Image 1 (cartoon, rainbow, N blue to C red):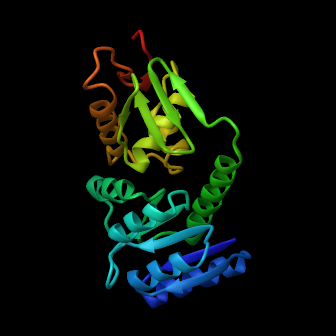
Image 2 (image 1 turned 90 degrees about the vertical axis):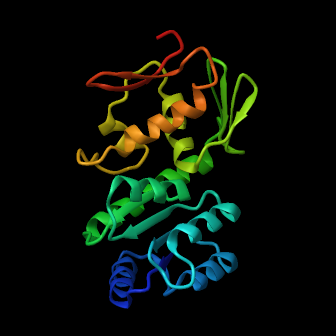
Length: 227
C-alpha cells in the first residue's frame, strides 16, 4: 500500500513516515501543497494524509483539486483546528477523515486501516444503484436523483446519504453515523452530524412535498417516506 504524506512540519512528517514504514506501508513525503499535487498527478497512491495549513497550496484547495481527478482515493486531513466549522470545511473539500493535532499514531493507523478496508470493499462491490421512494443513487457515477431531478452533493453529504439509503426506515444514532460514515467516535462537543443532516434536508427535501429525512428526538435520524 502506497501512502502520500503532505506535511510541512518535518518532525511530524518524519514521525508519521517512520511509523507507517514500520507497519509495511510504502510512504512518500511532500513538504508543501504544490509538491503534493504534482506527486498525486504522477503516481497512484492508496491513501493520502495531508495537513491543512501548507505552503504554496493549502490542504483544503489541494483536497478539492485531488477530488477532481481522483475522486475515490481516501484522504485524511490533519490540523490543529478542531471546531465544527473547521471539520465541515474539511469534509466539504472531500476529506474522508479528520484528525486534530496532537494525535496518537495508533489512532492514525487505525483510521488508515479502516479507510483502506472500506475503499477496497466499495471498489469491489457489484450493486451500484441504490433506490428508495423516488430517489436513486448511482455509486459509480456519484450522482443522486430525486423524481429524476439531479441533486448536487458534496462528497461527505453523498456518503451520509448513501448510508441512510443502505439503512432505510431504521433509526440511526449519531454514534452509529459517526462510526460508519466518518469512521470516528462521536464527539458530543460538536454538532457536525446535525449540520450535515441539515445540509441534506435542504437539498433532498426542501423542494419536494414528501419529506424523506426525519429526526427522532433523542434517538437519531431515519430515512422514511411515510413518516
